[in-house]
Image (spheres, rainbow, N blue to C red):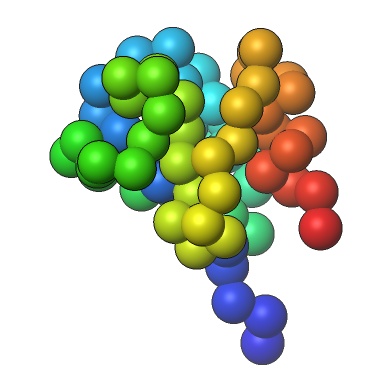
Amino acid sequence: MKSKRVVQFCHNNKPGQEAVDLLQREYGGQIEVRVMDCFRRCLECRKRPFCRMQLRTIEAEDTAELIEKIMAP
């Protein structure tokens, strides 16, 4: 069985809430979304989501672009 990818969002990332909702609703079987307390490695004062599993910051201008980048293999 393939394990789920984990995407973590800072709780201060208010613009990311739409992406969190969409990921949980549409991709719940593939992606595990976690909303965390502030973590030090996020960029731009916690405005971007950070995926610790892949150890990279995913930057996007809108929700659709963010979802596309998260779902990319």
